[in-house]
Length: 472
Image (cartoon, rainbow, N blue to C red):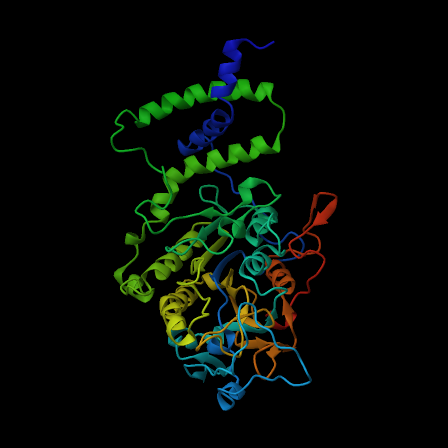
């Protein structure tokens, strides 16, 4: 039987001691940092090394942004009738009359891609993008739709794409998280942290949520200024004690994945005390860079700050950064039920300049050669009105785009019908999208599996085809 001393020693020096002993040794330079990961592709040569995903929470309206449909303008105000006796339904309302886009869409670039006048900065970058114009969803409800777009399943409990990528490829740097989430300053999206959960994968692969609104993006990176006793010498003394506890604990405990996950979390936390303050310090960027990203404008400051931070993080070895636009709820997002004319412009004003700046910045630095940029939303909007000039949810068709490593620039794949109501040609599912992203990372989506509850689970479930038409 263990003695009381043994019990207290194990309790006080268990998970934390094992972890902190190693991580503090690394922080002091006593152990050389090592990089993990499988860059180069686990199944075939990779084109992309890292990802920045820009997620428009709420269901961005494809017909008002990228999907030009002259018929909506021609028949504005008339009853919506797609013909052939097709039943017309809406998710939360009674279908109204046909609604034209309140703001013009114009063609841009050599590719002639249609873009709303609400996004003039992005419009100048269309020849760098590959548009997916016929994505469809299995649902028109925010929670399941967001889960489907992020995890490949309608229900909670499954790993997010960022978690799968972390699990498959590991980290590019051992002093920052592999998967970082930068939510809107106004709050988390629908499903809250469920969108970036590790599900049944080891917990170290879940997204690390960073609060960029407050003065301290990650809590407890530095000791309180009032605690003068926490000195470098005190840390060294603590390290010596932790090493002893570490050795004793290792002798008494066998392999345990939960212990490993906890150790890695503690290790990362301590190493971030040295790396994160510099990574999150945007004052190190020039004033011209702040202006480029729109940090000098109250409308775009928050999203611009997070786009600039995303670039700094991928430069420093973060593999997957997810930048969210819009919080959950009825306002302050892309869920424009009440009015497209009044609710869509502020969302575009907040994101247009920062997104274009991110693309320009990455390209100038040569980072687009191995960085994949994604623009996504959970579903689209209807071609007819809701109430006055709002639009209801539409899982029948929506749009997105890709840019950067391995992507064919200036192309468009798929078409919606003449109303932007349903897909009409080369429809793409969320499974196809995920399969394509994994393919660019060197991963065969059918071979990236984990046995869970008697089934070989994967990000794409039992579906998915790589969209080769948008690949370079």
